[in-house]
Length: 319
Image (tube, rainbow, N blue to C red):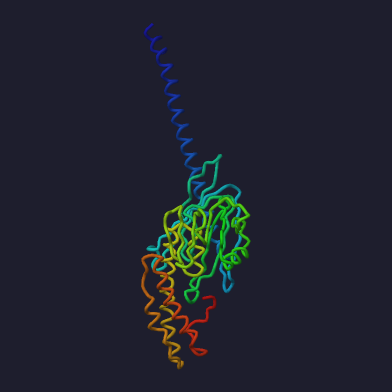
C-alpha cells in the first residue's frame, strides 16, 4: 500500500515538472523570437535611415535657385532628427533615425542613429507621415557655404498669410503640396505662418528685424538670406545648432580664401579683403549674432566686387 501511494504521488510531480520545464522552454523561445524580430526590425530601420540620407544627395543645387521632391513610404513613418554642433569638429553633425507603424497606431522600435556630416537639414525634431516633402536652397555668406535642406511631411499643412512676392514665387515654383498661400477669401487649416501680425498665427516672420517667432515653441530665431526657410520650418534647437555648424563651415572656407589671398598677391593683385575676412573668424553663441555678421559679410562682398578682373577672391553668384 505504501509503494502504491508513493507512485501515486510521483505521477503528478512528473507532470508538474514537465509543465514547468515546457513553459520555461516556451517562454525562452518566445523571448528569443521577440528579440530576434526586434533586432531584425531595428536593422531594417537603421538601413532605411541610411538610404534616406542618400536620397538627399540629388538636392545639391549648384547654381540653381532650389530643388524639391517628395518621398513616399508604404506605411506611416517617423523620422527622428538630432543635431550636435560640438561633435565631428569643426563641422558638427546631425543624426537621423527611422521607425514605421507596425500594428494599428503602434510604431516599431526606433532604429539606430545614422550620422549626417556634410548636410544641413532643417526640420522638426520628429517628422511623421506617409509622405515627406524635401526641398533645398543654396546659401551664400558671401560665397556659397552649402545647400540648406528643409523637410516637412503630409501631416502638416502650412498656410502662408501676407507673404512677400519673392517668398511666394520661390515656394510656389517648388510645387510643394503641403504649402498653401492664403488670401482673405480662402480658408486654410494648418500651421498659420504670417508676415503681418494681423491674426492668430503659429509662426510670425518679422522681416524688418530678421527674426521668426514660433509660438508653438515659445522661441524666436534670427535669420539672414535663405535661412528664413530653415527658421520657419524647423524646431529652434535644430535651427540654432545648424546655424553654428554653418558658421563653422564659413570659418573653414574663410581660412582657405585667406591662403588664396597670398597666392593672388604673387600674381600682382593687392587684396584689401584680408583684414575683413580675419574679422569674421570665430564661433557664434546663437543666431542673433548672424545680423552683425551679415553686415560684415556685405562689406567684404562689396570690396571683392570692386577688385579688378582676375583679382577677385571668389566669383560665386547669389549673395
